[in-house]
Length: 360
Image 1: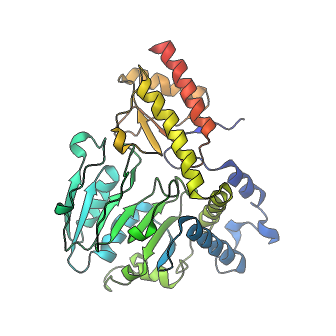
Image 2 (image 1 turned 60 degrees about the vertical axis):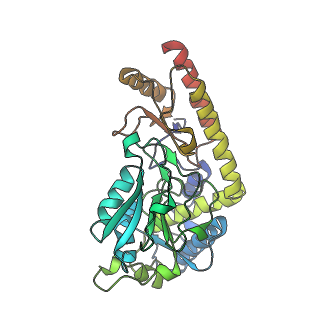
Image 3 (image 1 turned 90 degrees about the vertical axis):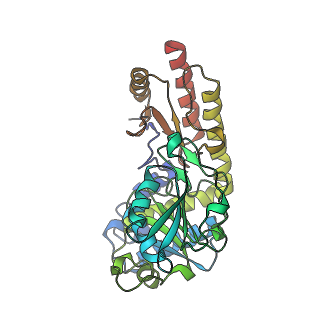
């Protein structure tokens, strides 16, 4: 069967070249006589895999030497708890910007550790924009400042990263990491679940400035202390070996493409094609304010539930899969991560044009 264009928000499509490489090495990695899923994480082969993955990630993201790269488990959701457990120490206070369901969950976890100051929220606007930030509202004594740089469900993105001065900036980048150039040095912690732009579910990337490691007291569980994983090079327990291997293949794929600047250029072209059509359509529209639009996740609607359902069904038959919007907002959503080729976006727009002519 021919591969479809998969617009899923996550787990998401992976580069076909990566999948073919993994298939080639499935039962015999590097002439070891075994597959990656079978080998010891303490063995030479896997140590080379994780070492290479870290080195490539450092290179493509230009990660400074005073940052640790950790390969953890538990998804981004575990980071909602690990961040406050490790950072909300000195003043038991943190600033959060509320931009959707995932920041809501992060805020709930942080409240278990201390005081949460919600600096700004776009909830009244149904999270269709990134709220303007007034630095005068930032807490001068916050232990950290927290944002989600891209909001998968609502299709919003920070066009500008807030300047938090000496307060460590923590960012959930699960749905836009590796999609555009960022200055890692602006952040204290960056974390991201793999299943959107990095690889299959199972591994969570944490990039943490070294001075933020070791702040937690001895009362937190060993596995939730960043120092545990930093001191053991992500090998305190058996890591998610195959997910790390796949992530490493994706990092090499990005390098071979020319790096993140080249990938970003393609992502902007893809987004421009889709948004340009939506802005000129008489049937479909984007509910997101232009200044806040995501490059990765593009929600759109017709305004009629029955017509949305018909579109999703017919799109699936045309090989355009997983376009149904998140259950909390409805409508449609096209996730156009790094691995989605520009041809997929063009095929989606062509189908939307046809659908509009027949149903508009």
